Amino acid sequence: MRIGDAAAAAGTTPRALRLYEQRGLLPPPVRTPSGQREYGPDDVARVRVVRELLALGLTIEDVRACVDRLPSSTWTRSAPGGSRRASACGPPRSSTGGSRPSTRRSPG
Image 1 (cartoon, rainbow, N blue to C red):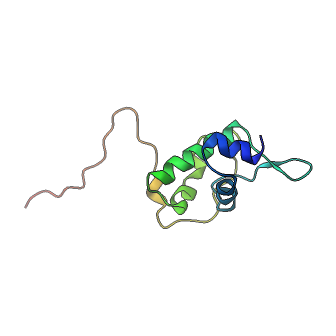
Image 2: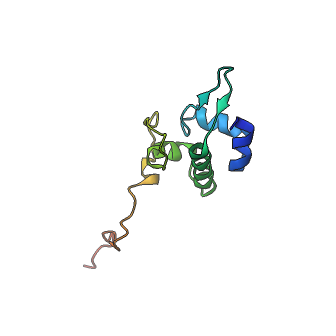
Image 3: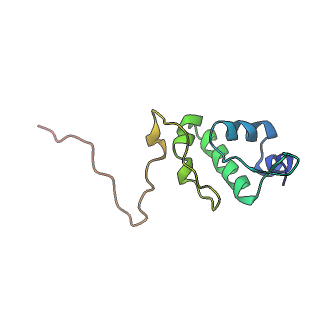
């Protein structure tokens, strides 16, 4: 689908898709012979996740630091650049009910 259709399906604008691509949040899309961007369902799903993360308060740098962890069968490159806050998308939590180590100090 073309950029306008993909943007509408993801609940955003074509301008936002171009920005996400430029900032490394989306891989460069396939281009038609005339140079127009073509997006697939995986791309639309990724844009929705990116928008949700941004809406939760993560910065573009935060999201860029963890784009390689977003689900997609077509995403094969690493995120460009680094981030001071790379821990924003830390490793997924275990579904086995494990707990985090305590950071509380013992009295005394």
